[in-house]
Amino acid sequence: MKQLKNKLLLLLFTAVFFAHCKPESPAIPATQTSTIAISFNHFIADSLLVLNTKNYSNSIEQNFTVDKFNYFISNIILEKTDGTNYIVPQDSCYFLIKSSNKASQNISIKNIPVGNYRKMSFMIGVDSARSCMPASARTGALDVGAAAADMYWTWNTGYIFLKLQCMPIIPKGGDSSAVIPYVYHIGGYGGLNNPTLNNIRLVNLNLGENLNLIANSATAKINIKADALKVIEGSTQVNLNSTPTVMLTPFSANIANNYQNMFSIINIIN
Amino acid sequence: MRAFKILFACLFFIVLSQSCTKEINPEASFKGFEAPLNFPLVHYNFTINPVNKAGFDLGKKLFYDGILSRDGSISCGSCHQQAAAFAHFDHTISHGIDDKIGNRNAPVIQNTAWQQYFAWDGGIFHLDDFPINPITNPVEMDEKMPQVLSKLNANSTYRTMFKKAFNNDSVDYASLTMALSQFMNMLVSNQSRYDEYLAGNVSALSENEKVGLNLFMNKCNSCHTAPLFTDNKFHNTGLATSSDLGRATVTVQDSDLYKFKTPSLRNVEKSYPYTHNGRSATLEAVLKHYASEINPGTTVDSRLVGGLGLTALEQQQIVAFLKTLTDTRFLTDTRFSE
Image (cartoon, rainbow over all chains, first blue to last red):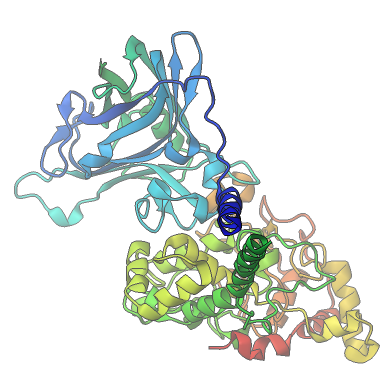
């Protein structure tokens, strides 16, 4: 009997010693959430953007093909009809969208509280705080050793927010050796210690009170149009032949002002 | 009571096994980064990336390895040679891959932990983010960063070293940069004859050199501020201008036109030729420029306009002083050698 009592005591102490103290689940119900798929559909005006092979024209009748169209979007905020905001967390709000990578054009935002949303806001580019963080905090879409390798200025530490590269169309029998590509690399987050060019642009898209998000929706989707022609036209008409290259110069602000208006809502699916 | 004894025995062994998993540190002799007591506060954030032996050894191996370049022929050490305080000995502009040349002189690498900006135009503001610049520059190492990482990941020696230094299972950009920074941050130069003089050895400098020191403090120190011998700022020193816009290349501000970073003058005797494109072959030529050859320009530093008016003797004395900034220990320290 004494041996059994000792064994039971040992068992009791062991159980108490090894028992984990788990915090109790909160009594209040968790907020219901859902995922939203967002699709970025690329166009030149009203034509779908097809890289390399399709011919396009701008408003001043300059003809070109497009070989690259990439941009960062980040810092997404969804605003409800009651005025409250859902801010997508920093660890999942940076996306690199590329025409050359169809998968990158379809993003999904998780854990969005259910409700009725009227506006989506985001930044084209990478905010200054993130731009100045050490490399270990710039991973995923921002990893310059991987996803962001060709969207980064190594000589002026910072991201290229938008890249549009086009080729002029050479008429049959024309001289292709004189071809100058049209290269637009727009960046500049405003500087670390001293003010420099700030080409970060904010976009507000009116959802028209059409996004009514229910819990665990498998279908909620926003289809967005990105009109690449609006990079080189808008408040400033870019003459491709006279301005074939724009990188970090004051003129780049004009292009950023143009492409600030390149996004629009195609439709919303609940 | 026997139950209690068994329980305590269990606890004892659990506690003992915990302390036995800690290895006795075999790298106790590696002292890591040591800041000279008379230097200002460091700028580099060592909390995120402290220097340890594994990271330092890895950074050094990478620094001297052509694997970072497209064809394996160019390493950091190709243009950053210890004997020249990690500048490029006797080269105005360095020749990179395929003998291509750029437009800037390879600067020294020393006392990086105190610097805020890197490159002559300060385009990089974090030491970690500097290496990707020469690595991807088509006229330097001409490699793509994903390709560098791919090569390192395919190399079992590097994988082991990275695992040891950063406990990661594969090599990524952040850890590559941190390893190189750990090596570079160890390149501390503070043991020149001038430093000995500062520490109280009055015979460390000759009388002529002491006069030079005084002249330097009056005429040069406001930009080349001791003990780092740089103010970490950007100035237009009245050199004849070219298409190189200097700081304005990265800030796109007219007020920054033709301004370049103040280089540290430590080891300047060994890091010739001088200026951002190596146009001045000797210290004498540099002093002559400051004395009487300042070109006009809207952004020329007001302290230099009209020249410093140094006599030939004064120029010679300043040059004599500058040579006392040579730190032979640093230039020959085998810890940093290839």
